[in-house]
Amino acid sequence: MKSEFGRTLVFAGGGTAGHIEPAIAVATEWKSRYPLDREIFIGVEDGLESELVPQAGFELKPVPRVVAPRSISFDALSFPMELWSAVKAARNHIHSADVVIGFGGYVSAPMYVAAWTKRIPIVIHEANAKVGWANILGSIFSSNLACGHAIQRGRFSRARITGIPLRASILSAAKNSGQDWKSAREKAKAKLNWHLNSPTILIMGGSQGSVFINSEIAKALPEFRRRGIQVMHSVGAKNVLPASSEGYQPVSYLSDMATAYLGADILIARSGAVTCAEFATLGKYALFLPLPIGNGEQARNADFLVAAGRARVVDQKVFTANWLSSQLDDLIESSSRVSDAGLDSDLHAVEDIVDLIEQVIGGKG
Image (cartoon, rainbow, N blue to C red; front, side, top):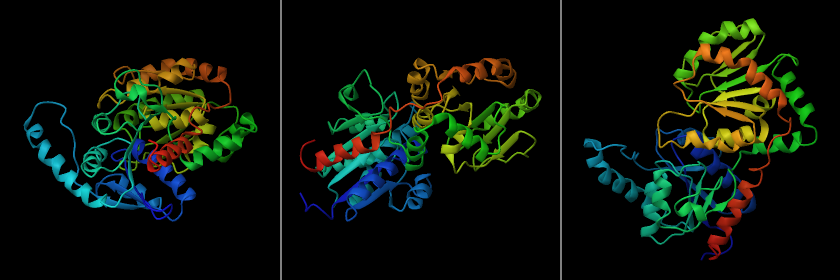
């Protein structure tokens, strides 16, 4: 092992904000504890990580994109060669690493294999309720596993339950709101120029937005206006920004998520693991629409919120403007019954994962 300072940690978590943001949160906490250490991120040049990682002040090393085929096809035949090409690139980036830390997504898989070939310790965090293929692969090479919530089957059933790492702005808002949650929500509404006594809905379609959700919300706007419901709608940076109107505020991207969560009475969103964790920490009541593609993880991510009476989950096939209009009274009533206080299940996740990395580097993993 190297000296106490000057170590190198390599992080991977690419594709979606749900993989990247937790990695950045952990790397940021590590940097605050050990400012002389070096943190490197592995990613693809055209992925979301190419924006978020440099913005957070970390260096990004590129590897070729690898996407696991979901069916037998011509693409499946080329997958092993694509994976090995990415593994070779990752080996070049991690040759001096003391530990690699993966958060899932297509970037993590080649890094896990590369680290195993070089006998570098591996730490893996799984945020989703259903483990993704990259982390399943990584768990073959490491027993240093952590997860957001208990997983019943497979190697992650023995993982350390840490919760899901939250970005600093969410943690700060939760800490400040804990003094007086009701007042914090009122101040958030005022900051967003929302009327205090009118229902408020925050709508998001994931880090890239959702054309489907945007389309149905556009059809529901007359009903929102008729009922005096205030709406903030994050449509996604790559989607067309609709015109704003009385009570309807569309934005391409929400830069202040903490205030939006605190001010909204109802959230309508995809049930990505990080969205569920941030909402649980600051939000009141949610209607989640699981992404209908992937390995089915989004259908299970909000189970703990449903059990706590803070969310409903509906299939995308059910969600239409007419259906939403018919459910508004019930959603508003459900929100009014929920405590103003957020949940605390993820408040210490960053610290717990950093503690695990410390143990692994110290040979205790």
